[in-house]
Length: 392
View (cartoon, rainbow, N blue to C red):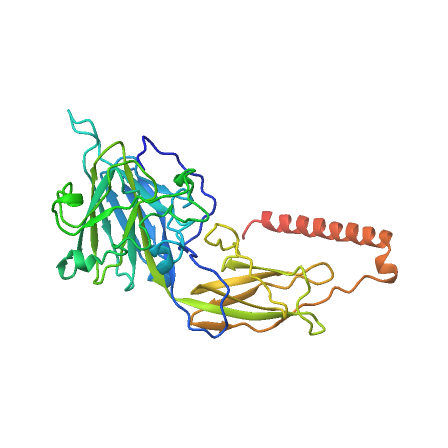
């Protein structure tokens, strides 16, 4: 889709390392497939970016420099994303709520009515086998892909383009629910780009370089292509070229990260299942809620017998359990997921005993509160005096 400018998006959530791509119900003890882990992008200058990888995805960072204009981080990942209906999403999980880069053409040359070719260089650390990348919004433009690895330049076959037969259609707006906000109000989105391994006649006639994703020339929505290189890659060079309008393109990078199925059970003191209204929220090791692919805090569902099971990227977490009134709030369940499966100890909730006799009298409660307040104030005064005592 062509555009004449860009709008900065507000940051809805910040996740250190990388956002969790998939959190879902899963049977305990099942073999756990990797989840797609997306780097968290930051922009240090108008033309320089860093993508931080999660420890589970190998750690390290991706460096990006570009000559393209209007380059930015699309932080919320909701205007454009590769949903579960796309071939990319079926392999890695949806990219919804995962940040990505959007890059335009270089400034126009004198006497030229459109932007010049822009060059984006991506420097990669050692990535796990099976990682992938996608270029989106390829309609009124085209992007050529040159890659190098320890063995030298990659061939078109080693880039391993996906879905070249158009099944599913290479359009992230098609059959999307929810639909990226950039897809507009249309109900059918059929535009898809062409992969030109070499230059040639027909749809590849406009490609001046081999290994080029070529748009159809019309300003549409959702056209994308994606790749899963079969050999190690150290650099990607994306040469972005004009066809019509004022276009820009999108770049996603994803790595497979090992995942674990985490299971457990929450019971009442009687041994009955956790009472109705008990909530379980997944948090990171620092106690901050972990967002899911819709940027909502992950609430772990409880089964009728009080058990739960979910899949998440390897790492350290805690579960914040909040029971309904009448039960004490337990300390968070801290755990580290480091293998395929993890069975947590059963948590038995503690009932709150109602106050009886004089302890429950309102005057007694008020007096107790005032006494506690007085003790706190006195303790604070002593602490202040101690802090003011000079060191001898």
